Length: 230
Image (tube, rainbow, N blue to C red; front, side, top):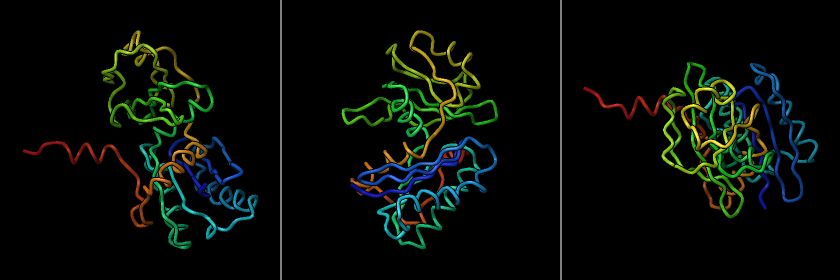
């Protein structure tokens, strides 16, 4: 099994996880706007606890978005610095997929509508289902929209909601989804532990990038690029 260091600073929580063949070492703290202060000490702590240096890692992973623009830039910058210095491949992981993976890990839910509050009366969201290997797989593209505009084509009535978008807009989302929604889980955060779990699968499939390509995913940028001109 690979040895992967994972970090996430995409939202209110700041987290680091070190996944090895035998152990998982993590740090997790909900401290909005403190990520620049917390992230490097957390990384140093988990590496020291494992008795490892960055050069002993197989890869480094990060929550690549969507999420807070500032938070995503912090994670990408830290990851690029470590990857360049230690000559490591980088594994970008969807924050929405990691959020859904965490909902399964903590609550055992298998069909998740993951949402993150985009802070401007909109949400980032995507739907995920658990596969036979207990990993969350996307059932919709990652999207950004107003809560009332969420468009889930599935008629299955067993979806659970998770993420800060639900915390902020659960009344609107529940009304929109109706009987397709079974429940929603308050106070679910993206956790580097789940980033690491998904990154380990990607590493075995050789799905990594060079340090220079470790960049955040901003869904708003994609919308601008896809919007027709004229």
